[in-house]
Image: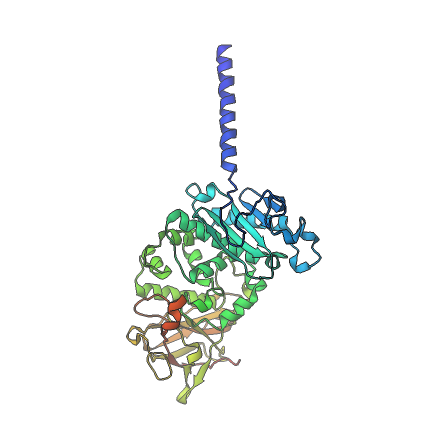
Length: 442
């Protein structure tokens, strides 16, 4: 009997311990900061007349949403549809984003992060502003702010993007390290794209703009909202946790390219090869996760070239590749013959183009074929500043591309912010002559 009682008490003790452990793991603190942007100093959350009040709040395991008093107790009852929003549906979606950013992308490390202890906060701000933004305060909690118009209906792309910024903030708070500059917007778009694979469709204007700017350097501010594509390529190559690792691994003075090369033990030459491979895949969006949803946007690139004598063409200065930028040049699929050749000549420093660091000039070029049954065939990569490349077409080729990328022999960071206006940018111009086919008609 004594042994029976001891076993019973032991079992009850285990249950109590497990229950307490479960409660501790599940309960996070809703920490209200003393100061937060767009929240009045001294805002009394217990007062229903305050701009933000517990009365106008919903919360879940990881996130709390406060909305401004001008939206009323029930935002769905607002007569103005642009100021109407379903706060509970938005909360469910934010929880979905949160779960993916933590457990799949691992932007923060579960068990080692302040996000284990504190909830994040979303403020739906009043007024006429239409800009959403995200970050955090006190190196302690992540916060995002949005006007109602940016969450009036699904898909909640703005919330996914700004929650990405809140996670970037918390990653830096946890690790005391992280990248800065245009990659922050680029990676917030990348995070958005993970939870909304159809992003290229519902924010198609970003894709349209990107196609006009593929020649800009990787990490150039011109493309920071338009181009999460290299990050997607890295994710496919190294796993979807890689960007979180890169953030935590950033060392003082590094840009993301420097960190990436160090983590993967890559030479500059090898990095140039990778960036050319990425550009070649972008012709048809040959990336496993998004291949199907991106299919309508395959074979859409274009490049402006100027015709010269004897069948030569020269890239226009308006779309000349910078460092790791690229051109996709569509070629006609030949009706006879099964191979094509390009003669290539790099002309760094030529009249009419930027002459920055021309001694560091480099290029990559090669062919891509897309067949009628959806297969991709990639030609051999060429690297010579003055050389040629030949490609044997696969059967049933439907689209044929020549890809040219900027491949500097040395890396240097892209200027951004105030520095950008003061710094002249590189260009890697070239001319080509194609044999066995012609440029495709527009």
